[in-house]
Length: 500
Image (cartoon, rainbow, N blue to C red):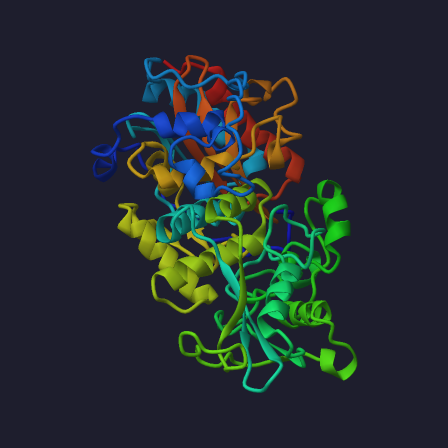
């Protein structure tokens, strides 16, 4: 996410705390098979439960079995479980001078841990809650995978309204819903498919009016802690339970320009009403009949009731599975998907589908996974809010937990992580001599607001040891390029050394 407005400097941190072992996680650290698969491209092969999570779209049970595809060639070397463990002294000697770089400002908090053992190897204020920016999405991803499960799909329904021919479009919180085949998100559920179902269900009854029910989400559409330019800057949107294409005004153009604009795009001010008008057009409504209003869907009709009975379901489409939504959220740093995922956590935990409900539910789920709840305080799911706080050590604990095999469903957070010098927000980084050691071996989520820069993920050392790291700094004043270079030097130093 790009720089935004100016932040007030937070209070000075306490002196750096020594590295420590977190006993509550060590019992679960039996190995890193799941993480190793994720780093190599777990979703590409769809082994084991992943095939079930992704579904079987396009499969034909009656067709002859195709010959198996050959295994893909290795792109990144996998971690070596027998590689020597770096020493705390070795890592400190390498990192201490880099953490003090002027470009990082005077509030730099960092944690490094070994994924195989969970042992903390380095800390500089590791337990200090810090503004995380978009690194927040790692916490959101883990929470929704735990609360909803990787295979969960978000429904969008159409039901019969109170009067003949009325159709109520009921939002379930799918931010990727498309109007037709030219939507922004490949494979998304489509309103034209839903409209076809409705026409079939109504039979000879002509649609007369569309009402939208987006009441599943409550509270403000914009989080109060967001910078003033977020609603108009193209990286956020009004968060409603019904929208199409992440509320983008022109999804086809946004898709064409995604790379050059860093996924910024003009958003519509009232996503639910816009979706309703698009649906009305698909149903053939014109003129005054195409006018759309908000309302509540009637209670569900009795089983077997006719299409004219208020509340009877006329059609339903479902989103991509959560495992894919999380992948897109992390790889593209999609703020709108992140907010929708946080609300899914809230709904799964019986809380309101709001910013506050999502934040409270995420905290609850992470605490239930054994992560230190006192080191995280969220206001949103995307990281746009400057009131979010996460400690670096919680992030390294979170990555370790997702990769240790005890919760295989959580490994989906690794599939979308950008690769240094190769993809996503790290595509153009790790390309100079001082940071080239990190190219191809650093996989991480980045976070950026003005004055706030963060990076968290995994790195394989020169000896083949897999480490997890998190570096958060929320009082930078130099150029963004200088700050990113300083962060990349830290992670490249881990990649380039055995640190023993």
